[in-house]
Length: 184
Image 1 (cartoon, rainbow, N blue to C red):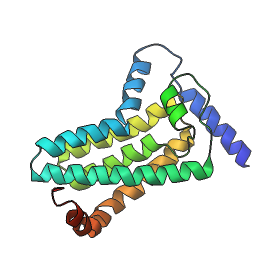
Image 2 (image 1 turned 45 degrees about the horizontal axis):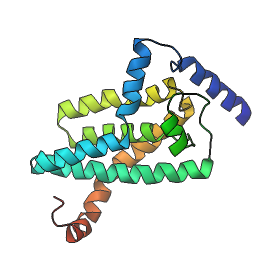
Image 3 (image 1 turned 135 degrees about the vertical axis):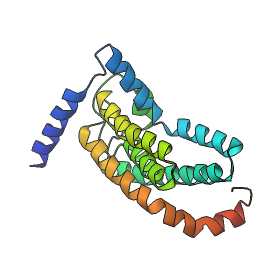
């Protein structure tokens, strides 16, 4: 039964794939697939932390904190499961740096950021992330670096981390501020 599910997953994933098909859809998928990179978000949030007001500094710190938690959780699961990525040429950096595909780190991060966008606001920020998050996840399948089930699992993990981050952050905030008083 598991073999049948994995075969169906591979078939669905192959139908969604545009990595080998030149055109606008492929270019859009490439852009979206890269837009979920953690380095991109880390750099952007660092800039927001430096130039933003107190409200946006707080949001930036919470999002960086959540990205770190999400990365640790995702990598732990990836190294336990050790599912190989789908075969393909695109995304060699991802394939070499992280050979495991389950769950998708990009999907977990994008969905987690979407949840936190809704929880932290403002509305325009939440709306942008809620639209962007699923597109990033789907782009990872479209570019052939994940199976569909990888992004479903990543999305579930992202939802969980997104909803627990704020209470957890508020609980550890006194410790963080005692260690890093300049943080907020």
